[in-house]
Length: 111
Image (cartoon, rainbow, N blue to C red; front, side, top):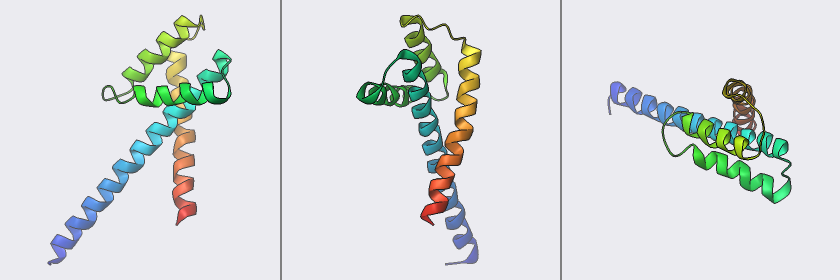
């Protein structure tokens, strides 16, 4: 195996790890968003867990965040919770930073 082949394999492995980490961070953000909204909806325990899981699952419908936004905005409307899309996106941004810290902290402590 040449040095070029070794570098290529290392690059591919890093890329794969980076994609997996990005997926985990995004899923964690969605879960945190689900719990944030569950609290606003007055849900707790197993109901909050189920709602958070449903928000994570909503993100598998299409690339990007629009599927999650659409789901939670509909849920907010059904529960008469007045929250704007821009406020929701701001919270998602805040939670993305939290999720990033949590996931990278887990990876660093496992090393």
